[in-house]
Image (cartoon, rainbow, N blue to C red; front, side):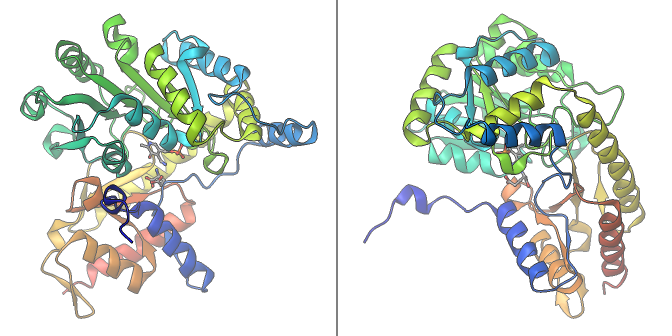
Length: 398
Ligand code: PMP
Ligand code: GLU
């Protein structure tokens, strides 16, 4: 029987596939170092988990309104005001099953068939597939390392067509770790306003910035005109180590939010009630757990970057936030390891996993085929071990 042509065109998530493969090898007794999927290795802070347990024990286990509980939508409004200087009403907030779900709701709410979405590469691999699921067309702009992987006005102008509907921004970025400076956000805001475009601002890594002089700025805070066309995406997976709880949220213009709520009411109903209760405590409670995790990530960032800089043939920019190191491996092409020739970043990643048991993500699906991504959301001990093995492999290349 014929299956959906659209579904057949969607590639499965390679970040998820690599983490499953690493987990499988580990279960089979291999000494794996996993720099694959970006997932904090910390436990969810105890006071947040306790709120989940309490929700179960007190019978807070039923359906909630599809777009989330009033308490959580209110907590998100307070968070957005406190941290980002933007005012939202609870009706503009949609709580979903992770930021991934918030994003697909967004694309489904704003796109018609053939609408184009500008996605600056390197990009988190799910955006392009989500745009396709929503009948849109991803338009990839390959940003340049010389520009710190920032989008330029000339690149935007070149990518723009009459069908352009939206621009996706991720700051700090997965996979580069770069933070978009205010002047760049202003340029993009002006472009979006003058060309009547939506901006989808994925701010999921906002709390994980390691440079004093780099501050997270929400593009929606730059004025009413850009606020009216921005959809902020955020969630608790990364900043509160809550990946498995599956809570993300979107803050959108009211008409967009209403459509997202309507879609979600059919596709998923509410996100997990227990996780929503815990997320209220995450957002309203003490924030020192976030500061502590951020400090630890900074130490790891400093270490992994230093190690990479000392390894010949590898090249990377120092990440400013998130927990990824984005490494150009093109200088190893044409070399071989134990008789296996390396012609691409995918070859490099495969050989590294097969021979050295280090899992990394080759970045063709992120729009940059010469790069690999290392997630350093893992212990210092494992980072050290993984970098030792990468160094051994590079030094043994023929
Ligand atoms: N946006 C970015 C940039 C991400 O890296 C991730 C990672 N999963 C997400 C959104 C989705 O996060 P989640 O669904 O766990 O909230
Ligand atoms: N966002 C993380 C990553 O990029 C988790 C996996 C995924 O959702 O893609 O690795």
